[in-house]
Length: 212
Image 1: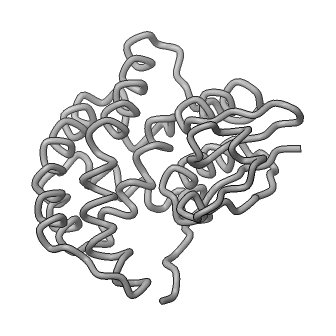
Image 2: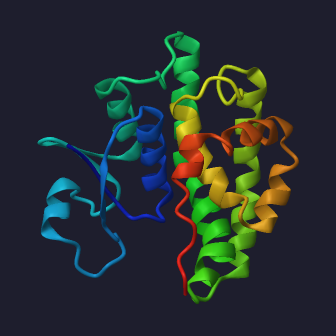
């Protein structure tokens, strides 16, 4: 049995779901809100930092989304999400690292959260946070665009772990009008997103937005 334990609106939860859908893995979902006051003791045993997601496969638990997706790629049959050419393997890892290290906070925690998510649940948003996040997102988009132009990854052909990691981030980012407008300046990522947005795994894992 495969169980994905996570928060439905977490971009990282969706990243793991995209990989599971790409590999056609049947799985159950256990909803865990990492923002709740008292996390279940069982969850803290599986994830000592109290974050999400956690993948459970039989008696094996694994956390950290990049690690989860590498496990999914190795443990299950289905289309390969990791190329074999050394340079392309390196680029896949590079995209994942760029997204995690430089993209997540400005694109999701600042732009998406303050422009889209917080208003959807009736919470206050901070225009300064959103503006700072938008500015910090531009070099990230530039770096990703350069890799897409190179053509080894984010090429609109092969769907890899890099695509799994980036697609949910961009899906949230462009829900902010400012994010969508910013993306237009990076033509290779625009072309890639036109491909990725229609991917069945991306469409099927869209959590929507909560009601206030």
